[in-house]
Image 1: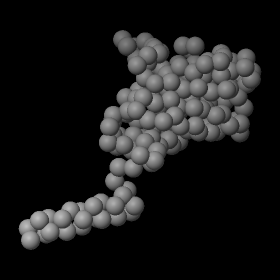
Image 2: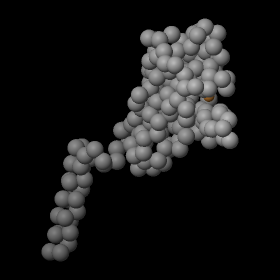
Image 3: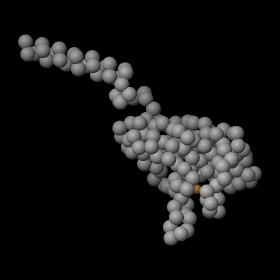
Image 4: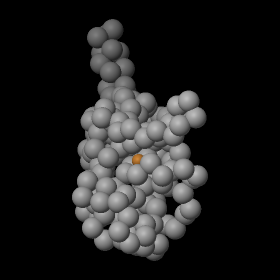
Length: 163
Ligand SMILES: [Cu+2]
């Protein structure tokens, strides 16, 4: 009798977990995207500009830490992940060779004045209204391809001086 009660309880547990997988937002699901990307944009460049800044917000929707490790864009010779900081009053820009750590549930903004994408040597000037395809490569999640609009936004003071 105890055995059959246990079996019944187990069946109930399985059934309810199946239901949770189908309807729940928090249930693990291998097919669900593990990273959401928002607010993506790329700064418009004058003709011949050596670089263009790219910005977006990444949210790790999985329950494991992930890492943005690389970005690819047909609109640039290559893309680097940079961090801009002010050290002793001097603005500095350095590549983040380890990428960007994304803790579960914590949105990380790549924004002017902080961590950003640097589209190096765009072969064609990026004009406001264009769209740039960015392929985001993660450690721990599948790559995500997005289209980022190009916007004409004045740089943060000093930002352009370092390129
Ligand atoms: Cu930069």
